[in-house]
Length: 214
Image 1 (cartoon, rainbow, N blue to C red):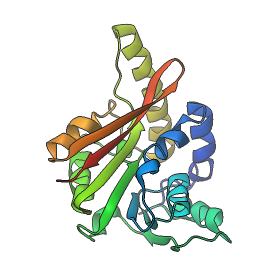
Image 2 (image 1 turned 120 degrees about the vertical axis):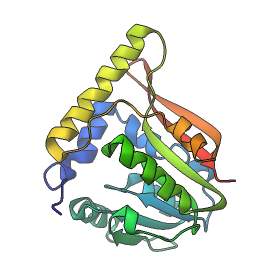
Image 3 (image 1 turned 90 degrees about the horizontal axis):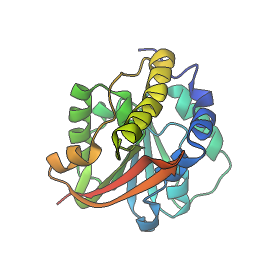
Image 4 (image 1 turned 120 degrees about the horizontal axis):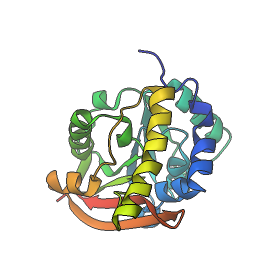
């Protein structure tokens, strides 16, 4: 299978920063204040990995998984020569083949689930939840569900579809509305403990959701 991010991968973080005025990076690290030294943390679809690097800086035992060798190549360059208490473990694989069930204190899916169509997202969320130990947490950072009056929801939806169409053209990502991740996580039996929003262009465009596995 070809690397769908071969072309856009090196530009991903630059485009995300411009498009979100820096809020995507803030969202990715939005729940990091509760990471404890020694926590076992997995980043699924890590991409260029600003969130994984920050978690490692906080003393977490970080594992990253990504199918794109292009993205992992950029990530390796970012951590080259840097010291972490626990060296970051890099896994080049399809996340569905990663089966270390109930092994992680925290599993992150930051701007990863939106790559997939609805029928895959439901299976993927269940798989990621299975990797979280009982009492651990799953974190989803992504575009926020449109809210407010009809005009606000329309503007937010158009904003999302600009990004969605760009990545459909450049990387063959799925076309779909913004997902209701909080509802999805509740449907898996996880308890929502916190939702933090990140504003861009006058309203909440991104959110980070912290959910505990009972």
